[in-house]
Image (cartoon, rainbow, N blue to C red; front, top):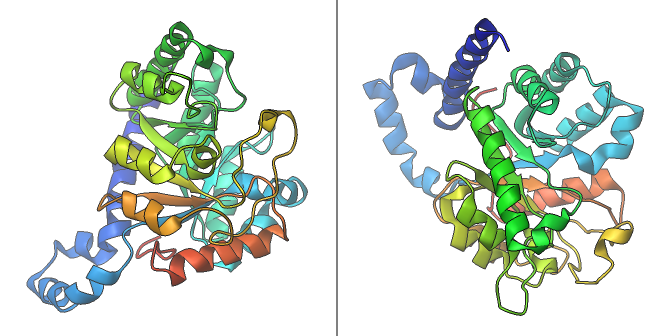
Length: 318
């Protein structure tokens, strides 16, 4: 990689950092340096701010994979029309032109909260850098599918940790951050009361963040809120999805059981959100399979999170 390209990316990400701060503090703050008048306004709105949800809603585009295969811009606009402002991306086209898709996102009024990716090393790492620049986002998450047999032994887990650390170091050197998304096998307890993710965390770099999939944690037989509390502020994203979340030995052998809109299944989202504490956490809605029309399910999920004051979907700066 040429040094001038790397400099360009880092310069871009510095700009991105300012934009991200603006989104949460308000663009007027950055433009004026928070004048005394703004301080007065902030004080007047302090009581209202105390009740405003800390967390922000996004939606994983994998939810709409069938629709995206038919019509990318139209599907993105429909997502925006539901009230979503942020999306989590995945590579839904082998021939994806990131710049074109980035413009489609902007045209729909959508921003990217995070990006699912293959492990970002080698050619995939270079793709991750291009995607980050086109989507104006610095959070790259290894989606974790399919199950890796190395999770079955401690030596295998250590080997995986080395790969994840290398990926994180590559991204860090280019101004990006690396995160891990779980399924059920990382969270399933063995006869000794231990589980693979617990061992993995002992061997990965501290700068690797987590996207906890609350549904698969529950499917594995654990409490999502306990896992969130245990890993604290390293949990920057949650996958919010609902349904039966029942364990079976053949989970990975076929389509998953249909999921339902958030709040209509077995999950206790009040406890889950409470476990996040006062750390901002992204609430990423996802339906791997949907029991009803997927747009209807996504809209009902969004409404549930907002109406129960668990998270917000709006933003102060685009």
